[in-house]
Image (cartoon, rainbow, N blue to C red):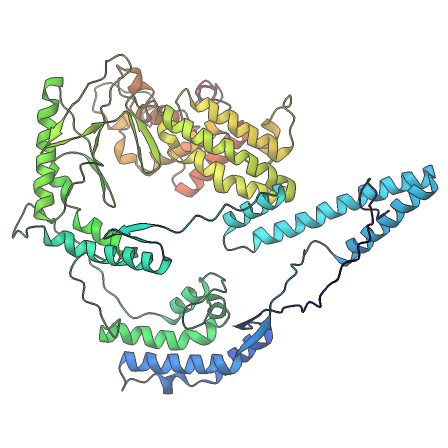
Length: 603
């Protein structure tokens, strides 16, 4: 009897010849970034006379070379590369010495209960087992909480804990990519990587060579009153940037991890300060610049900014509303009669095509989609539109900046997508709540569910389908507060200062109105011979269609006008938001109509 379970073990003796096996030991070469070595490295950095190493009579490249050589030399002396034995057993940090002793005592008690059949010992064993189980769960919780808190990638850590709890096996590694090049199959990873690299490195130049360069063109440049200059950098700025680095141990070819730079921020501020200011003064960034004939480096941060600057005059050419985001362009065209739709589309696309030709750009017709907006009562338009030999596909919905827009603007597709994400997230939240504490689970809720519920809520918050999302939100609240199905969630909403979905909609909508008052007109600004009541309220336009009366613009006016005067009259934006949030938490509205029908506010 081993005492590990309610089943007895079976011992079998088998005589087999066993050869002498030698235990293989694995080693790895790396630097040990422990406290002693880091303090030694910092001490040697303090002893360096950086103003003698980085001098004005040398160029910035020469100074950087001297700085790099000095830094690597100090690193090799203070934190040398050493041979370290790899651990074959992975320690469970929640398994403390006390828990090990308690588990051993529990097994002894188990054996004792089986031998004696004493009811007193059996009851004592059951109590001991219950206390030990609670202690183990508490120890695991503390380990998981600390693991998430200290992690640089909390999302990855959270899912690793969930997979560990559910014994979920890692996904199967896919086979190598196979490419067919010149009737030959290429599967070797390095060759495949080089083929992809050569293709993407040359695609920009090959594409630009087929474009005809035109002088002049249809650009409309507007004068700007803003300019930007790079002035001298302060030492405090350098120190702040170094300390803002992630506390990671990964490193590049220089073998200096961001974690070491952060801990040596004060010692490295001076050399970086001298090098950066000299670089700006000499207007030299790199010692060896690469010639770029076309396009920009793939994945560069400045690429998006340069492209937006390049195309920022397109809306003036189209002469209509459009949304620009990176290389995606959404154009809105309207006409009074259905017969003029194709003519309007052709005019807009012709202007866009001419502008593209003048700027050496091309329209991807396979990704260009058409969508018509109309109420339910009107029959959809069957567009079969062709432009320059390409048929443009008409769709009933598409995704723009994470929002699923449909042809009726009822936001049903977007709500279904969000509903699916929250339903899947509820499982993760339940596991996080079991393995950690309430505070960690609340942090996870705000990082995911609240972000999904608040994104674009000013557009879809008053939709009839939004009620399904509120039901999902209450399911998450029941998980967080261990609330039964028959009990109300309102006390937990109020206790933890969590906003309900209708309250999130009211908060975000009033926030938008307050930040964009130029889109609205107050009653006091309307010239009339009558003395209007509630002159400080926003003017509510007449609505003929329900799509307009329940739309974002009209609803934003209704919600803002209903606010209590003590909140609405607050001039400072941060105080206004604080009072509004506190008000909504106290009220705990379960529907927007409940807020609009409240007789105690808006007086």
